[in-house]
Every structure is written in structure tokens, then in C-alpha cells.
Amino acid sequence: MRVSKSPWLLHYDGSSCNGCDIEVLASTAPRFDVERFGIINTGNPKHADILLCTGGVNSQNKDVIRQIYDQMPDPKVVLACGICACDGGIFKDCYNILGGTDKVIPVDVYVPGCAVRPEALIDGVVKALEILDEKERAFKKEGKRSLTSSEYKALLEEKAGESETKEDTDASES
Amino acid sequence: MAGKRSVIPFGPQHPVLPEPIHIDLVVEDEKVIEAVPSIGFVHRGLESLVTKKDFNDMVYVAERICGICSYGHGYGYVDAIEHIMNIQLPDRCDHIRTILFELSRMHSHILWMGLMADAFGFESLFMETWKIREKVLDMLEAATGGRVIFSILKIGGLRHDVSDEMLKGFLPVLESIEESIRNCENTFLNDTAVMSRLKGIGYLSAEEAARLGCTGPFLRASGVAFDNRLRGYAAYGKIDFDVITSGEGDSYGRCKVRIGEIYQSVSIIRQCIETMPEGEVSVPVKGFPNGEYMTVIEQPRGEACYYVHASGKKFIERMRVRTPTFANVPGLVKTLAGCDLADVPILVVAVDPCISCTER
Ligand code: SF4
Image 1 (cartoon, each protein chain N blue to C red):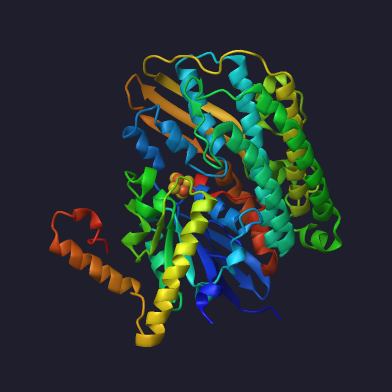
Image 2 (cartoon, rainbow over the protein chains, first blue to last red; image 1 turned 120 degrees about the horizontal axis):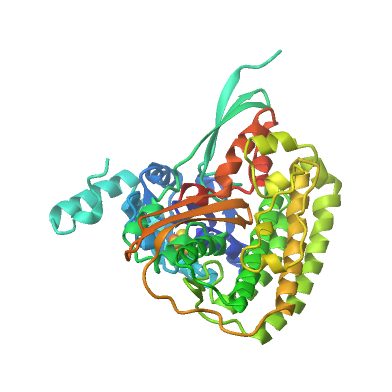
């Protein structure tokens, strides 16, 4: 039985304006109903297969996001919902926004929109299911795990070191 | 024998919370002795953007202070600038703004009903209320183009008109919403199981609520008739409505007030549609704002203030927002002290906290 037949979903609100959050919730409600895909909204990271992140990363919540991500069992996928989670969006220039979710954890699917529309979100989730399948195969065959947040951080730092021009990768953050 | 005290962390990621807030609950056995909130998970530093974005573009940022009460935030900012620039709005614009304001209040309150149902573990009621909410969103989408972020406001009026036919078309939808809310209301207010989770939980007396500076439905549920719409901004001065209060002062009363306000919003929208004047919806705006102004409005969650200071340049100097949830946190902390651990989610949700506004 594949995980993607009934993946459980966890939602974390980074520093979003709530616009995307309520759309995430709305997509679990009757009109859009992601439960059609066997998806259940859970509140426990240890039960979750898909992480939906809304809103940008700030200095207060970056460790929370890392922790939640690390607690999720393999295979797992991460969706960045809304333009804030993709790259900071309208709040990019704010002093407390470090950028999108991919500043701290690896993101598999980017869903744009401000606010993200439930249709787009569902499309993103369906894409994520394919990725989840692939990851599961790799995990079962070769024992391949997703990067942990600290491995990802090291990777980002390495990349930043390679191309000096890309200073904004925020590798210096503690 | 009293047990030992221990501290249970609640949040920032918690099943009932759509938003991150962290509360340290000091408990003794099952009783909460003290609740210590800590915030900052959603702080973006949005007010500082005024120095980087044109004052016209700031409307979009103001709307994104919070996605649930986005319309009100946009309204507060736009209203402050319009007062500074002495802009007289056409009547039609005021009426349409009022309709949109009330629609967004409805969507916020219905959303809250759903979250409340979820908090006391009534999943199907959550689904039911959110189904009703979609109808409100459909109206908002038809009128503005957006489901949660509308971007229809601009300084000097509205970006586009909403046609009379469309507004007339809202009337039957409103009726059907009223009917479905009535069904849900029955469960919320008369169901024994639900009542046992709400009645007497988190009691706050009128004096205490006023002393702690609570606002919005939270305050009105304690029996204080305070509603900023009575000031008569937009078209509220021409509309007939009463402030809805309830003397209960507990979570049940908070439910009652919010449900009452949904009907009230429907009636305000009806009156606005009936008396809709003809004419333009915007006036041309020239120049830059110079001066300062403080707008006070009634958001779904209570009183919100918007302060703008401008000095005749493209960028305004300072914007400051004071949000209702911020005013309600002392009340929340008060109701949490002494409650049962199992009631914490209900009490938190009963305030209808909007962390995103509070922290900006
Ligand atoms: S993308 Fe837009 S709607 Fe979503 S959290 Fe960011 S500002 Fe809000």
C-alpha cells in the first residue's frame, strides 16, 4: 500500500497573513475537499506525510519549522503555499522576513498565489503525491532519506560559498 | 492533596490553532493556575514597509495585515489617508464599502463558528459552517474578484463599481445563508452536549471586561454595549441597527453574540442594497497626503485603530495599527487562569484571536 493513497497533511503557519491559511483550511472543507484524495488534516508532525507551509520565515519561527520538519517520518514532501512561502512575497522587504520556506527546509512544490487559491493548492497537493510516490520507492529500495534540516543548511552554505554573487541565501544566519 | 505544578507548552504548532501563538500553561493536576503567552512567531515588521512603498501601494500591504479581516484593514488605512487629504467620497462608494465590510464580517464570524465547532470536537458542524461560508465568499468573489484578499479599495473610492443587478442577486443568497445559519444556531445554542462545553466556561464580568480593555464580541458578550459602527463611518450613520450584547459573559454568550451579528450583518446589507444611491464610486485624487489622522473602526474582532502620519511626500512617515486581539489578550489570560486544561482550546478560540493582526 502506497502512502500517497492516504497521505496525512500537516499545516504550519509561518508568518503568513492568514489569507493562505484559511484557504488551506477551506480546501479541507466540503467545497474543495482534499479528503477525496484520502488526505486527512492532522496536527501531529509525527503522523504527517505532507507539510504545508504558509508565510515566510522569520527569526522567531525558523527553528519551529526546522523542528516540525525533522519530526516528520520519511518519506515526506513539503509544499510552500502562497507567494510568501515561495520567496517572501509582499513582505520580502520587511526587516523580520528572511525569505521563503526554502531558506530553512527543502521545498518540493511551490504553489504561487496571494492568496493561494484552493484549486491551485489542490493541484499542488496532487503534484506532491507523485513526488511522495517517488520518494517512497527510493526510500524502500535504497533507504534514501530526505535531507534533514541541518544537512540542508550545510548544503545551502556550500552553495553560497560556491557562488559569491548569491549572497542573499542567508547562509550566515545562526 | 494538591499536585505538583508543572508547565505545559501550548503551541506554536497546535491542532486547534490555525495560527502560531505560544502559551505556557502552569497546571496543578487538571487546573490551569496561570497562563503566560509569548508571541512573535508572525512578526513581519510590516509597518516599516511604509517607507519603502508608495502610499497608494500600501493599501495592498494594509490588506495583508490579516487575511481574515483584510477588508477592514484596507478600509482603515484608506480612510485615514482620505481624511488627511480631505477627500469627499460619493454616497454609492460608502454604501458598497459598507456592504463589503459586512460581508467580510459574516465570513469572519462564520469561519469562527467553524473553528469553535472544531475546538469542541464537533467535526461535522465545522464542515457545515464552512460550507455556508463558501456562499459568502462567492458573493465577495463576484463583487471584488478575490476570495480572501480583495484589493478593491483605493484611495478615493473603489477600483470598480459593483452593479445593481449583482447586488440584487445577493438578496436570495443572503436569505439562504440566514436559513442555514438558523439550522446551525440550533445546534450551537440548544444542543446539550455543546452547551455543556460552553456554558459557564471562561466567565468574565462586565466590569472586568471593561477594565481589562477587551473589545468586540468578547466585550459585548459580557454585556457592554460598545460598537464603533455607531460612530457612523461609511454608510453606518444612515443604517438602522442595534448593538448586540448578551449578559452571559461566558463562551456561550460569545457564541450567541457572534451568531446574532451574522443576522445583523445580513440586515445591514439588505438595507444598503435597498437604499443604494446612483452615481460614481470614486473621485480623482491628486497630490500627496500631508498631516496625521487616526481612524477607529469596528472590525469583526473589535475595535481597530489606524494611525497615519504623512508629510506631503510619496512615502508616508509612519503607520501604526492597534488591533482588537491585542486588546483582548489580557482578557484571555484572565479567563485561562483557573480553567480546566481541557477547556483551554475553547477559551482561546472563543476570543477569536487573530495573531497575524496582533503581531503584524
Ligand atoms: S501569499 Fe498573500 S495571502 Fe498568502 S500569506 Fe502571503 S500575503 Fe497573505
